[in-house]
Length: 249
Image 1 (cartoon, rainbow, N blue to C red):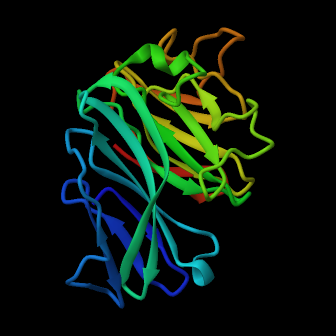
Image 2: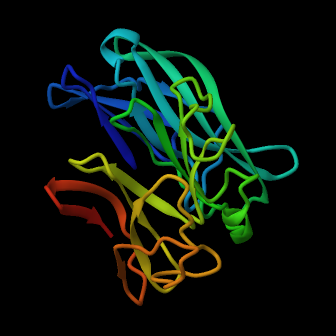
């Protein structure tokens, strides 16, 4: 299990990275039958069924979103966001609302995959640079980015770059983010010899691969803190109380 989401009725939805199955815990019991399974997926060190989010209007529309990886016939990795419709404890009608072609050969690394709805009702996604560092600085690519989209996958009119899902760029390999009590987007990001905790601002460039950690360069947004060296790989993040955060490593 790598990601989970809480339904208004108390059910916990979580995804199994390697099996491609979405499971439900209800009344403290793991249900035997999966909610749904995504196939085919490609699995690797940082690939598989990676993210899950429930629509803010889940009580009425029953939409469950997932992020997963596939490989095309050229051997290029794709990061996809699909949407299921929940019928009780079963998921039906998987619709792809987003597909980023990495244009990069399979390595199994730097796929991102965390998704979450923001307080503005938009769906945000971490997409890694698919182990092809230069893509993080290319605004024509969705790799190495934080993306912001409408629930149907379309581009919001107030995104920082016209007709683009890109919300922030220069992202290496994010493993989680949250929105704090003020609505700020706080992200954990794995580095090479050090890691970052970032406050994500619209249109911000976070430096990778030109620099890592605190760059002291006005072209880039510096992290609020760094971890390491050596890198410890922070995963996930949650606000415990105003200004106090927990994350795994």
